[in-house]
Image (cartoon, rainbow, N blue to C red; front, side, top):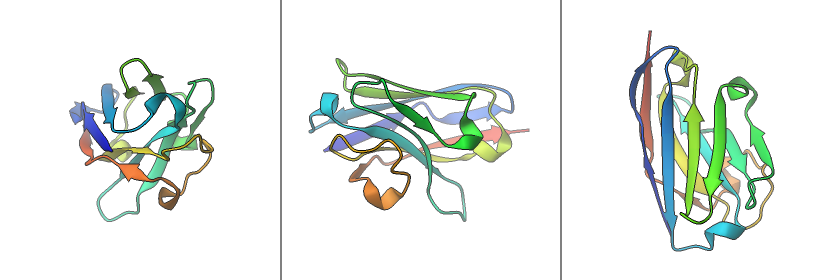
Length: 125
């Protein structure tokens, strides 16, 4: 299983970034996918998750209305569109999968089976 994130970078507060995660080695179209983030000195935290069909989505409260998770099962890709970014969104962002049709409300990192290497997002004021 391989998850490869891209799209991170440096952006000013109020700006936007689009993160992508390309997956391989798994049956992408039948599994739950998600994004987590980890700021320096803090624990890894849940950001958003999407069901295999894309019909069910769950967000952390702090990103609701600003972030949008989506997926393209034909391309084995999951996207995190981040708008109205804030300094507190600065973190390494990780793509993850439960490698099954798991609950989108599984927010604990230990419940997710595979992880990407992460991509840095830095929001400046």
